[in-house]
Amino acid sequence: MSKLISLRYLDFTTKQSSFPENGLGCLTSLRYLGIWDCSNLTCLPRDAFYLASLRTLIIGNCEQLDLVMVNYQVIPLRLQKLFIRGVPQMVALPEWFQGATNTLQHLVIRYCENLEALPGWLTSFTSLRTLVLRSCPKLLSLPEEMHRLTALTKLRIRKCPDLGRRCQRNTGEDWPKISHVPNVSFE
Image 1: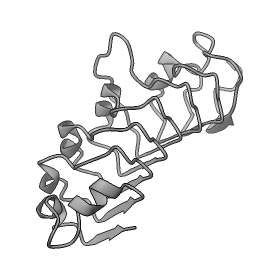
Image 2 (image 1 turned 30 degrees about the vertical axis):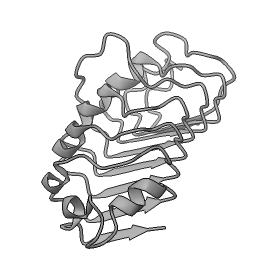
Image 3 (image 1 turned 90 degrees about the vertical axis):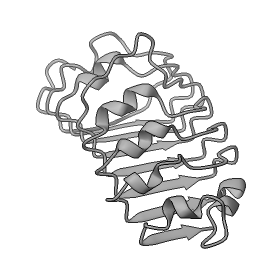
Image 4 (image 1 turned 135 degrees about the horizontal axis):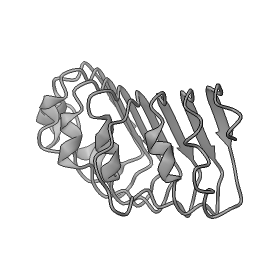
C-alpha cells in the first residue's frame, strides 16, 4: 500500500483478525475509509487514527470488532462523518471518538444491539448536525446536556423502543433535552 499515497477513497473487507502494522498510515491523502463485512476483525488499525485527510469513516457489519483502543490518548481527528453499523461488541462510543469534537457533523449508529448509553462528552460536539440512532434496543436515554448541541438540526430515532418513548414530543422524559432540534422523528 505504500505506493498508493494519492489514494483518496478506500473500501475494503478482510477475513483477517487484524491489519498489518503501518498498513494504512502511508495513505496520507485518504479522505474516505469504509471497512465492511470483516467478520473476524477484532480491532481497527492504530495508524488509521493518524490519517490527517480522513473525513468519512464507515464501519459496517464487523461482528467481532472492539472499537476500544488500549492506551488511549486524545488524537485530533478531522472526521466529518462517522457511520457505525452492525458492531455488536460496542456497548459505548469509544473514547478515541472524542478527537473529532470540533469537526464531526454527521453521526449514524445502526444495528448496534449492545450499545447501552451515549456518553456525556458527546454534547461537546458543537458541529454535529445529524444524529441517527437505529436498532439499538439497549439505548435507554440521551445525555443530560443535549441542549449544548446547538448545530443539531436532525435527530432520527428508529427501533430503539425505550429511547423512543423517552423522547416523545412534549411527553417523554428526554423531550426537554431535544426540544431545540428542528427536525426530530421516531419510529
